[in-house]
Length: 464
Image (cartoon, rainbow, N blue to C red; front, top):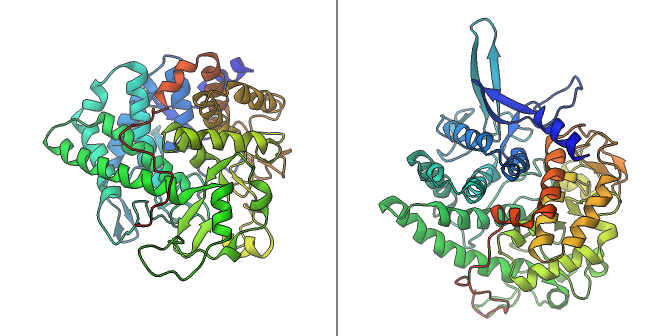
């Protein structure tokens, strides 16, 4: 199965002027390709990690440099110009057989379903640059003036001052892996965790020259505020759930306990049964009078890998996954979010999206690509046997089913109704999970140890 996966992964390689620069999203032979024949920044990450772990770093280096060049392009949607630091969601290579030339075409969100720029692309680019540097020991790439400038441009976008009263990033729906309307606008956990990880990676990669020093100081300040905010206000365990259940509302003072004026009646019924005695997780979203209690896989796994989660919180996240194995892993790892929204709520939140019906696609669908993130989180928290168990579940069907993009149903029993076959990141995610289990030292390229200076604050103080 591993040999077949490698063969399939190599067939997805995209070349530009004789050099491999990425992997297409899927090898599906269906007529309606949409944008699955493009190289996506987020989709390439597991492919890049697989090649790095296999000691083939050249493609990763080429990808990082090519996307960096695309960042400098003028980016316009209608008559509006996007920020200079925005990274593309994807790109494709156009071959002109008459002139015998090749050109790159990038999509910065102007062709995407919801016309939303990808906030996660820039964060994944910084995380991947650090993974390349850590894996190869080659610092010359990250030290290039253009790489240093690229990082600073990305950081300028997300560290700029505005009207925010929180250190988290305000986002539109559809700006990350969940790239359709799914009620994740505001302060989604996936973006906040990636933001935190990208800031920590940038701190390791930025030169301490005149330009770099200014950013280092801003990053350190933001990390302190962000870690405090996330660990206190996004964290949910049994005790915190009980506290919210007993919240008073309409508090007006610096000593307010219910700082976001969340209504206890808005607590969904399912969360009381879902929360185990010893587990916990980071909420999907927290904002004014809003808490999204859904469990999102990517955000919680990245929180563990980046050490946004304290060791105690990381342990509790894994305890929740283990105690809710049937719901989150079922017959195919792993739920992108839990639970699904349905009925009237589905109509309001998704706008009646036929692709995101209950237990399908982003709405409680099961995504094999998430296997690599689960495996990394398991190894980091000392639970490799849990990852092995999840991989064995996936191995029963993944190859036989043709490496689908996602599975549908409460248990992930059915191949997704619109899932592409031979989805590249399903293949690469499996390979990365296998290689990490065989050699746990690979974890180092995608994991950051706890920063002792970011002192964990697990008690809510009276002041904000």
